[in-house]
Structures are given as structure tokens and as C-alpha cells.
Image (cartoon, rainbow, N blue to C red):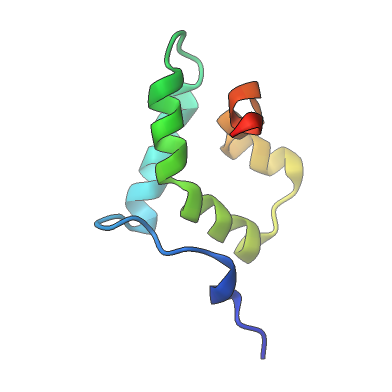
Length: 80
């Protein structure tokens, strides 16, 4: 049996899948704001484990993943 748990880190303390998905939804509007890089960076760092879990568990198509996590595909996200 293959154990997926080796492929994703734990969620940040006090966070759950529900709270991290709320942050993801907030990020969709944060990405569109000007001069908001620091807020986006902090939220992206906080949601790393949630994104990783999505990739391993759901194996989404690139366009679907990009629609859910647009900040990851911006220059700052790619460089991070």
C-alpha cells in the first residue's frame, strides 16, 4: 500500500481544510488588487500544505489548478 501522507506537510496550527479553503477564496480577490504582494505572499505560504494536498489527492488539470490558485502562476509565485 502506498502512503500519501509522506507527500504533504501538516496544516498550520489552528487551521483546517475549511479555513484554508476560505483563505484560498480570499486570495482570488487579493491577487487582483494592486500593491498587495505581501498579503498574497503570506496567504500563499499559509496555504502551501493545502495546495500540496490538493495536488497529491486530486491530481487536478493545470488549468483547473491555475483557476483555483492564480497567485501561484504569477511572477512572484513562480519565483517563490
